[in-house]
Image (cartoon, rainbow, N blue to C red; front, side):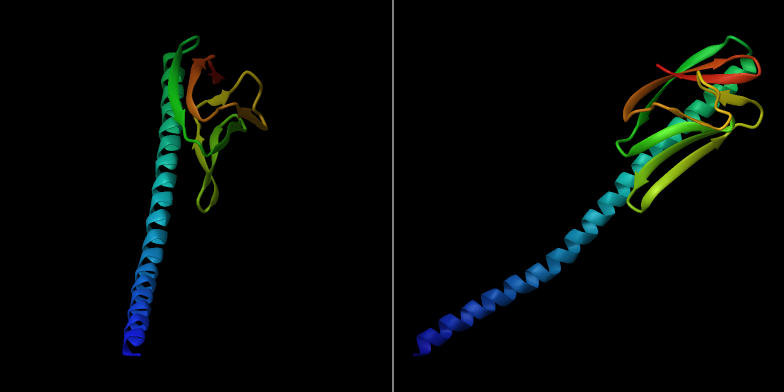
Length: 149
């Protein structure tokens, strides 16, 4: 009979070791994936911020040079982009998903107005897709026009 008792004891010890290992690995895996998701959101936000700044700087340059000057800017959009557009001919915005919900980056133009091929007095969208996009920024004198290429 003592042999059966030893076998049972080693099985219980093995199950306890497996239970403790699982109890330690599950929270570690959760923290790892949570941290990785946060890093992905930060990278996407940085890409959108870089794109917005490139468009804003390009528009200011073309407005400063004068009418009929243009430049093409290449921007990269992350996979979580929802849309982009212009409000009131003075605000460029990008809407995107984050791990916390929907977020928006807005860039203001106060010295001149911006538009697309349509009037953006209320709101208009720019058909930006994820991946690489080319945007032509052209000065029309009193305003700057953005055209997706």
